[in-house]
Image (cartoon, rainbow, N blue to C red):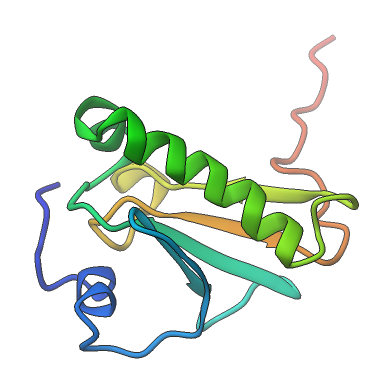
Length: 124
């Protein structure tokens, strides 16, 4: 997947599309998802042009990476889900159904989120 400078998150970063910001610093923007899957559903994106978590890990500066990880904790606390628990999810590539070619993660919380994946039946 190549970086597309016209993807929805790039357009949000350029101010071409609106978003409801919940956090921003020099390296990260966090905003409410327009189709929330939980009471708290925030999307966090780096401001740099990174397609995936692999691209971000390989090419982002240490400062960008640290800011991104810090932002997760800051947003979880500010949204009131840090103590009760929250889920962080990032899709990578076609098999994981990554829809936007800009590295991003979703922070979900505000209710019991259930098991991440269904458990496989024990083989006997």
